[in-house]
Image (cartoon, rainbow, N blue to C red):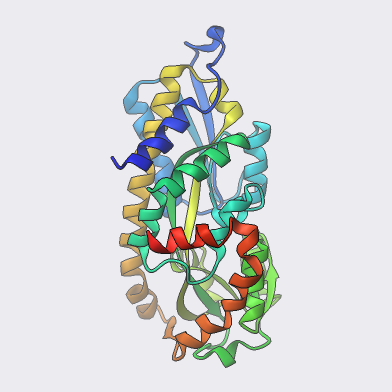
Length: 325
């Protein structure tokens, strides 16, 4: 196990003071909420997490609530801090509203590929971010892969000029909004649970997101044009509530941390494999998959986003460390 990944695991075990002795031997139930559907890698990760804890015989049961049953991503993080949610997986984009340093991963075209993303996750950069989460009562169980974020629309976008004036749903993050404004779109932040209706009712002309989620949510029926951009490689945070951690005995904490680390590794591998096969399936299903003709123009258009936002995401030094990993 890489040094940085061991550091994240240690933080998950020891982030908070020991649980009161009276609670040490008590069975525990963890409520794991997320916003995707049961066929999505996030849900399969949650199932793997629950199964590993059953196998560990740690007296920890996991109840899984998919599809936003416990709220949208912002609400899920707030639930961790309040103790109404015990475990979740949430994008770095939304996490950045609580721990600003995570906003660095919203800078467009930052990662070369998934290998680069995973190297950063398992580096001292990742370990340092886990410490910042712990300071907000959010215990990092691991960093998962959320897929390459692209563009899906009701009419084709083959060149940057085709995007001009289109209303594009974005995640609720100011840097992502800044990115799509710089590209010439009209960015429209909408919570995940409302995206389907927004596309169906033409509140927006399209959305940015991952292909796996696009297929899982049935968006292909509403936005049949999919433009490959890979403008973001999504960093996902798998987190345990600090309040929930306090209820666990030391042995249960270690079991939860180990199950979380293994489940995250499983999710990374599963998501990459599903993403690899996805686009052939989409094309066979009638989706028009488009490779942009002027990718360099897209990358050039967003350079001012770096200048405007570097200071608020940890500075140019952090950006340089990520690029050099």
